[in-house]
Length: 216
Ligand code: HEC
Image (cartoon, rainbow, N blue to C red):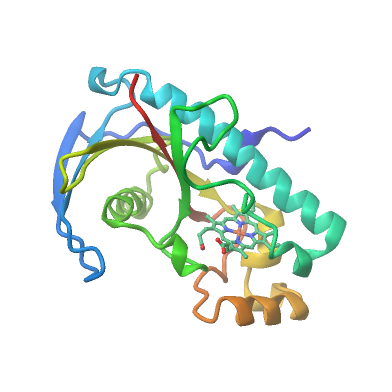
């Protein structure tokens, strides 16, 4: 069995200071409420065991993502797999993972999205930009990012993020157009007319898996 660690790009701790605060006024008119975003080191005392719980949950989600997309493509072909892939049967809120009630939400997002429903909110955008900056500077992507979001209504949310890389098997549906089978390409075009998630090569950074973890 392949290890789930394969989907992760290799990793260096962020060199930034242990906590930095960014106030983001969301640009999209649909979400006018500003949110405050703070990043923490995974070992920051404020975060408690949130990073550990989140990291474990992402391992399990990432493993399912890899195995599910591989086995569905193998069993049903890539075109049929389009409708099934990516944990679509898993609720995105509520108890997301069996036995891990503290994980209350998960999401996959990217700077180049396929489904507009996966578009980043302001806090996710900040996390995406952080990875992008590291990669542009020639550094490894952070293995894990720990973020506390303060919402306009005063509520706070802890989020854990992990960057995911494109594996060879992902190119079937996210690769350059000429690497995607014609029936798959046609189906993707029909379902996602504004698809930006093609043109990837194996090894490239694809996006983030994010979970929300309730503090203890
Ligand atoms: C059978 C085709 C298929 C394969 C194989 C596949 N994907 Fe996807 N991918 C999709 C589809 C379809 C969506 C849009 C899902 C949705 O509607 O939420 C998507 C969406 C995503 C997203 C969410 C952001 C966005 O663009 O909407 C990420 C991240 C992602 N894929 C990563 C991967 C990775 C990593 C792999 C390999 C392990 C992979 N995908 C393999 C079809 C595929």
